[in-house]
Length: 570
Picture (cartoon, one colour):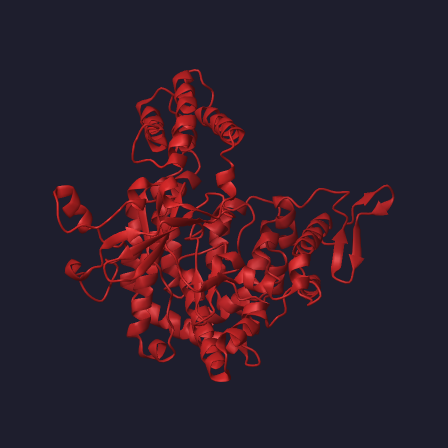
């Protein structure tokens, strides 16, 4: 927020607005003497608060950048935290709940006592007010009885979220992930939109007949920087499933990513013409191997943002197909049928597998269309969970929504959703594309029937835009206009707009003045006789719109030249 104030408003460091933000930051750290704090939180507050208070006092009207001073304070706090041995908590996967919250660990529901006891006796399990079919009836809601004494820590995540288990008065256990340092309001709003979409699917006879559903979960923002996320049981990230499917794939994942970066760098070094070769010491840096063009990354730097953009503008079908075939070879990457095999093993019998495959196809179609409508990006395999007991997919992490991945990222996301070879391979020997397109038409038709409902649900983003959207605008830009434009793009998808035309409009503000813009447009629109180019700005019907979407999602030129971390070959 302080960076935003400095960038957008240029307010002096002693302004009331900055003072308010600094005070809120100090309050977030908490009082080290607060008896409700757990030992870990109290230790951190005791260490961090004096450092932040000293930095805050040192800020004057002549301080060049408040945000830089605070970043230096954060680095100092991290060093001190590790110096006193507290970093041992960073690697622990399980810790007693009382280390974080004595209140939670000692919580006990009582039906007697004073006002405090009566209040605690009526604390409800979170997430019981989301039904769209009927009004909530609190008399039937489950209440909190107690908490599991231990908490699981997700050590691989930067924010170290914690899994807590709440015991309910209905005899069930409810698992939630406590997450900090992140605004979960966007996740909660996306889930609300997804529930509205799911209700439209259940009301559509054709969608209901094919069991086309969207898996949702509860998200509860508690503050602007913390909240609870319902833990989705029996799921596993697709990325982990793919890597665990093959020892070769697991051992080669790093090498394959480097090989893709070498491809991107080589394509960029060819230049926008695709023919110019750069020389060094009399020899060509760009070489050829069985996967296509490459270069030695020990002699040149790894690809920068401009290298990706040049490669995208210079995308060629033959070169793209060649690198994708090479990267996806079973000797380097997970097999095409890795997801299919996982479902087979989990099913136990042929009938159960066929049912799981049907659910997988329906879930892939519904989640792809719904994700495209809300402009959901960053769909790498770790952000897609698979319920192996059921076959359905669950998408997580909605930080890149409403076109953020296309509008603001230096390497724009052009692919509308993930329909890569392992996802399509799960449906073999049937024609995966034909199967999915048929179901996607049913999904999009059902959602268009509730266009007014969905547009109304999107209005919350205009009335109360999240901080990240505000931060994305440049100094002097109209924030309200920027927010309305993002929601307008989502609405146009329900009005038969060509997906390629929408993507072009989203890329235009950031890239239209660059040298690679013409080539980037060619990549987005595809061949002159292709589905996207033939459609024009508006599609004739839902079938043509879905055809354009699948054409973009499976275009080798788009996949091969996407950001390496997306792993388009998997």
